[in-house]
Structure formats: C-alpha cells, structure tokens
Length: 255
Ligand code: PGA
Image 1 (cartoon, rainbow, N blue to C red):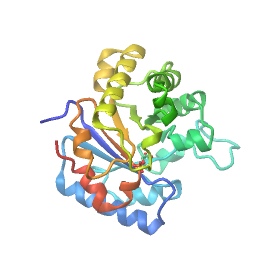
Image 2 (tube, helix red, strand yellow):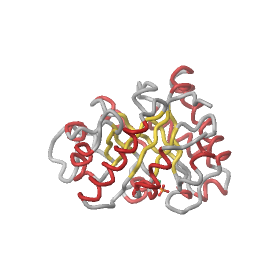
Image 3 (cartoon, helix red, strand yellow):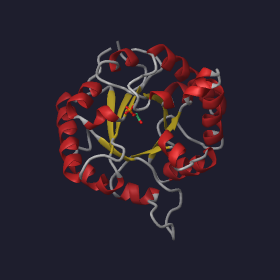
Image 4 (cartoon, rainbow, N blue to C red):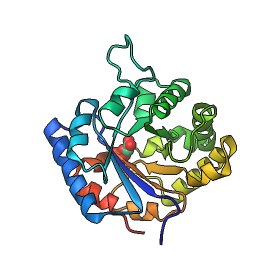
C-alpha cells in the first residue's frame, strides 16, 4: 500500500553524543538509506549545533538531509549564543526543528516567537519542522484539540507557507521520552484535525499535501502501525534515533 504523501523519518539527537558518535551514526544511517534507495520516504537527522557540519559531511546528501534543532530568527547581530538561519543553511542543513516541547518548556518559547522563527527559516530556504502537542493535563481535561488549534493557528496563520516548505510534527508531551506512545488512532485523529486546520488557514491543496509527522516514543515495534494511518506521514524520533539499529528499522517501516 502506497502512502499518499512522501514520508519523512526524522531523528532528533537532542543534547546527546560526541562528534565521533554523531559521525559514526550519521554514516551508518546514510549507508543504510543509500542501499535501500527509497523513493517513497525522506530521511533527516538533527544533531546538536556544533556537529551540524560533521553530520553533513558524513551523509550522502542524495539520501539523508540534516537539520538543526533550533535557530534564532535574526540574520546576524549581537545575540550572544544564538545561531541564525543563514548559519544553519551555511553548514549545509536543509531543515530546522522549531518549537519542540522541550524548548517551549525549558526556554519559554511562545507562539509569537515561533512564528518569527518559522518565517525566518522559510525565507532562508530551510524547511521548518514545527512541533505542536498537548500536555497530559490538557488531554485529561479534554482540551487537547483546543491547545493544538491555538499552537497551529497562532504560529502559522500569517505565514505564506506551502506544502513543500513546512512540515508539522504532532508530539503529545506525555508521549515524549516516556515509552508511552499515542495510539495510532489517537495520533490519526489529531493529524486529521491538524490537516483540517491547515485547510482553514491556507487551502485544501496545501492541507492535502503537507506532511504531518508523529513524535513521542516512536520505536521499531510501533512504527509500522503508526505509519499505516492515512494522515501520519512520518515520524520525529528522539531516543530511538540514537541507535543505528533501531533508527534504521524505523526508517525501514513496513505498511
Ligand atoms: P522520543 O522523543 O522519541 O524520545 O519520545 C521524540 C522527540 O522529542 O522528538
């Protein structure tokens, strides 16, 4: 069974690994994907900032893309400690994860800031992977759709994105790093909801073609059932992307 949209399997290495480990892992992933020559899926890895160029140099760019885990929206300036979209691009990266729940939680990133980051990424030719997702108390109080609606609309409403220059990742906070993934049905329901929101703020064509990834405890043993869902177009993988054997099995999902 073919998927409607080209899938994207993305690895978020978070703040893990040494330069040698990043190179080794990137090479192993690239070797695997180069052999498979998939036509129906893309692969991306997002190492920590200092290893962006090492990761770019370790992969075959025809098969594996590299992304940053964050960026700042200004082009350049006196912003000590920040990294601009131009710099990310200059390192050879093509994607940037924006608004991960860990950045919202520990670095107080708001939709207003995230809108600027998404806009800056797109205007510099990077593809943002914009993350949204509710906390457990939101779901328990039946507020999960409201929360995700606000995250999607407030960050994206004023942006002229297309389906090929923005990716959305639905990552319920309660599923990240917990070993408890959203069920394929729970994820599918939210993905369809997000797709309809995109239709409302842009148009039907964009909403039908934009890729919506699921993230949160994706593992080799749940990827197949998640990818069987019509509106799940890929995965954003944390922990399991750090092990070549696990991540390549996720990349090699079977539906
Ligand atoms: P996890 O992380 O796969 O370790 O749950 C996902 C993410 O944070 O993107």
